[in-house]
Length: 191
Image 1 (spheres, one colour):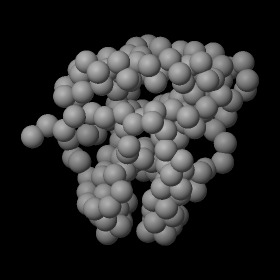
Image 2 (spheres, helix red, strand yellow):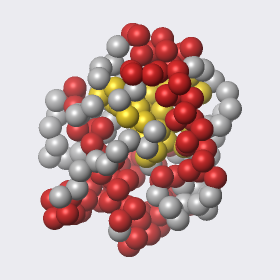
Image 3 (tube, one colour):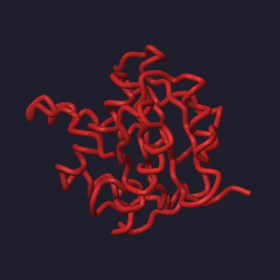
Image 4 (cartoon, one colour):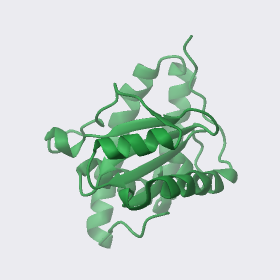
């Protein structure tokens, strides 16, 4: 049975729910976790989103020791998800877009994106988030796109992402210009 994609109004609880998940990850991983950041739409105040907390775990390498620690911490790896969407014009080096993806076996829905420090996909998630936090008009337009997508493609995950990914790439083009203009750099880790 396919589950429909649902977008909900912004929830005040999302920041606290991220903090709880991040603390558990930090406790389980210790020094393996270089950064733990709240990413995705639930990390942008005022933005409607799927009611799933997106967490980016930044590590030095995708290695068996890390996978074992995450399994012990209650996460299950989805082995068919091994990389992120590559934006047009970006480096196509698969190492820059490699990731591991996990979901908790129980409890609060979380998408755990494990990416390597310094890779293009690790930077993309942080810049995208920070740009939407700083640009209310871009965040509002992005929200309109997501709401229209669920109106027309709520039961078709492939169609939803086939449209949403290029929209994110357009937003990232503006985010890159903003980053160059402001001197943006990723701030301290969220956890």
